[in-house]
Amino acid sequence: MKKTIRTIIISFLIVFAVVMLKNCCSYMLPNHAFGIRYIIGEGKADYLFVGSSSFRKGINMMTLEKELGDNTYALTYNGNQPMNVYIELKQMLEAGTEIGTIIYELEPGMVDRGADLSDKRLLWDIDMKSKHEIWQHLKERDDADFFMFYDYYVSSNMDYLLTYPVSYPMIAKRYYKGGNNGSDISPAKTKEELDKLPIKEEPGIDDLQKDSLVKIIELCENNGIKLIFLEPPKYIRMYGDKNYSEKITMLVDFLKEEGAVVIMGEDMGFDNTNPDYYSDLSHMSGEGMNVFTDKVIEVLKSN
Image 1 (cartoon, helix red, strand yellow):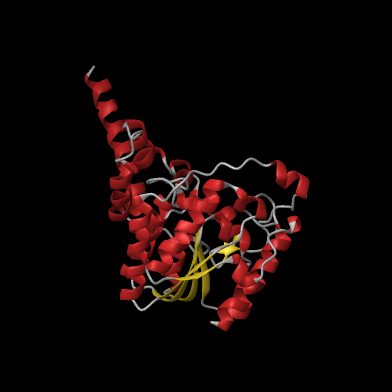
Image 2 (tube, helix red, strand yellow; image 1 turned 45 degrees about the vertical axis):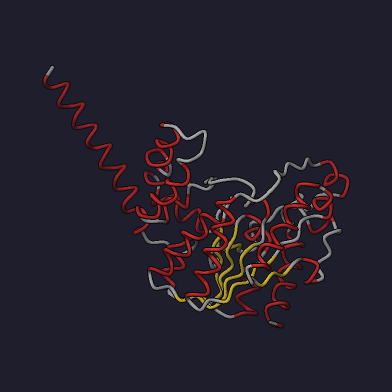
């Protein structure tokens, strides 16, 4: 019996040590391709594109680097809410990263709900202090329970930790300068296909996300960073949805009231009625990515 108890205790201690190692030290592992640690490792970004999958699918980093210079990078996580972005930027600046201009993806779909974390890779890239800060928001959700806590601190990224020597090189091949290397593209859909896709948009802007946007604006002002909110335009059908239309109008009005620079797709002359540019209602096809990237470069150079 004593031997069994001792074995159980030792096993528990080993598991606990591995979990703590993952949470406290994962962000220290080398990363030369994507995420927060990559940007921190570079030390300086003249242009930093920050957002979610709309930017990852919508901008070609090789073209941006050629036109805007070597110090051009992207920081994208799926479902990257303002709450998360504020913590990401804070950690990079605290690490001494110099940032000239941030081009922030204007994405209404990221502001209509409270704290969420759809991309657990972020937990791999941040230190324990930042993990705790995000959890303080997540635990306020109505559905927060032990299983969410367990998934957040224990099971998330455990498979990545155990397979890191193999997984990291495979994932890194998909990125260039933290963003799309031109290979992560989806084929365009026809107008008929796009018209059949469902639209599921929640109404309004959540207070947490609104407060986080204000903090991001203040953070940039206090650190001498130029901040531009730029819209990757959705397919035209999205703007006919009542929730989406009202939400984007409220978001733009709010940002302008805060003194932020906002650039919309229509300001760039991007044709969001062309189905050849879209793989779904929110993401670009390969052709759309290249056209949109050229439009972004024109706008940035003119500013």
